[in-house]
Image 1 (cartoon, rainbow, N blue to C red):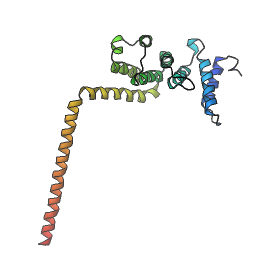
Image 2 (image 1 turned 180 degrees about the vertical axis):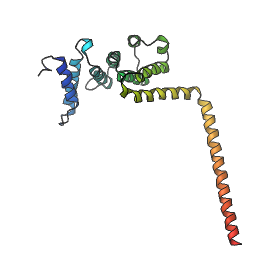
Image 3 (image 1 turned 60 degrees about the vertical axis):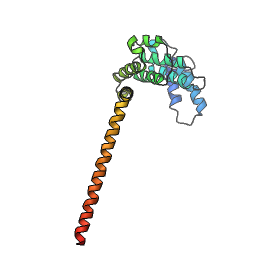
Image 4 (image 1 turned 135 degrees about the vertical axis):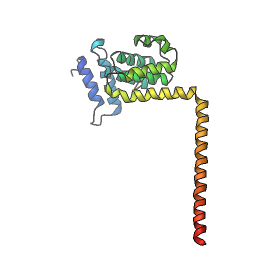
Length: 199
């Protein structure tokens, strides 16, 4: 009742309860309950809005839960959460870039991402994932680090693809030759031992 009366904290708590409902509430009703209450909780003054509410609303718009997908609104909610220091929002913005979503420069300006990092996709991803990794939230370290290293490895692969393929071919060829020599020696050793026992 407090949520319906317009108390913002109650809206956030109601949305959280709808999300963690274990009593078998129908999915449509559950999503509608979450949408309504998280949306209400984001309508408070900016300094009082919880970053989790912003991320949830970004997720609703990104995945189009119950409505049409709206990439611009999703990016805006994630940006607001990132400005509150939430690494999950930075990770989601990076994911949106990896999915080839076209996001406006206004978002990157709000996040103080330098122009040189905005001009190339990989530089932008490295900037987002590095900020995510360096967050004070320790639970973000591993996923952000994995995402950052994946981008670095892909960048190296694209830059040195031919060299890596040649080196890989040479290494595999050497391993095959060594294996064949060892098999040959092993077979010859057994043949000699068998020959000695028969004489």
